[in-house]
Length: 617
Image (tube, rainbow, N blue to C red):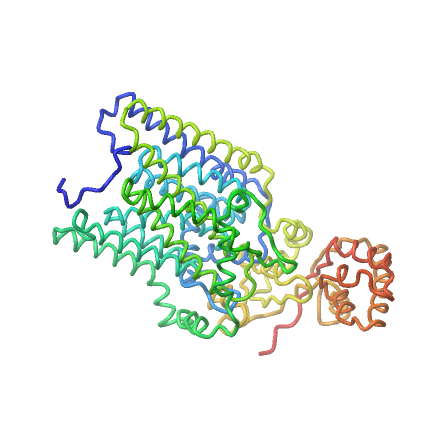
């Protein structure tokens, strides 16, 4: 091997050159297999237990399951919908999920198993890059950090196909790929391009982080150019590498390009939105406070500490003083590693660049900064402390001159790492059997009426599905998904084309009837409409309980209107929340009556499904 293609590896983690039958090689391989196997254990178990769930997807999960089911039929060219009226850039999340989804039978719960299996694939890829960069010790340290992360994420998130969650582990992989490129692994640009495409296409918020990782990889690789050029010296190899990168990018982004040219024009819609979002973004101050809350020790959420949120659910950061310890620890480790362990220092530079990208991404969030929106900070924090630990290890092992000392330190670190891995994943495995599916309470309610409703509509397609009341679309999404699975075409209006794709536009499909998913007091209105036929529904109260509740509710409404709180009176009829807290202690409101009404309301609003005439458009 020429000096130009030699990859710098610290002496402590130099490649094993002894026979594969030697005790050292076998022990090393066994250690890696055990470490990676332990981290895969909860993911594989979650995929297994998901197959036994009885689950009726609703809300976002119904949409994701439907669009995954569409691959090969009404193949999506764009990613998940955004709450701002456009789609994330590309369909790779749906396309990736569709493979294990169909292999597992394409049942509703198969989407959960598919998500867990995709995460398992990413774990194996992370282990491969970790082995490339630091052999067994770094594999164990990386798996230990991931086990701690898994313990905090919990089983529900680890098999959740929702794009804010399914993109988490690929971000960790992308960071290690960036570091490997900086070390001279120029062929890592190909998987980097693929994983980066998945991240951006599935969640456009990752764009700043992906960009800075690409830049830092290029800068660090160029700084090492005398020893490891960024591109192969051989012209044929260089052409082949550039061709592979270009082909990967073209294949990944071709669907989005087709949509832009001959479809919805989503790419320009994204650009227009970010050029003028119509609202003020979170800003640098909020981003730094979030960073402080995520990197702090020992109260970091990725270590299992509950994140603090305000009354509106918005994530609360921490004072900037909480950054003092993380920054000092990072700077000290980087300062020492720059000369004594340059490879470890380059990992820290890579993680620092990722952190800067995370700050930029957080600062550009529009609207409340909810925890799930910026959950990428759990990955950044995990890598932050992992990079510090790797620098400390690299310097310590380099300072030891006696082989016996190195062996003792290696055995100690590996032993601690394996114990940490087991301690982190064992509770996740224990909890996997009882772990609920996403939106499980809604699934239980749907079990009371969904199947009869679908059976009644088998010969009435295509149908237009509308929702009214407190259901917030969750039940409507569930009904649309169940109907499509039963072979009943569903049409949607302009407001839901980003959810269900332009193929379901009512202007294209037409419709024979309208299915109304109705809740709360609106049910009475529909029952009084002669043009509506009730197909099924659910009520948490029996007839006598419902009549008694309505008497109490009407009395409470009168009291609220008498004191000028028409907003709270309206909330009692449309399923709105916050009545109990807003009306507590108000003069003129019977507090015992308030508590009685709210206690019953917490049992859930009734839901009913009606079929009526097709919409006039």
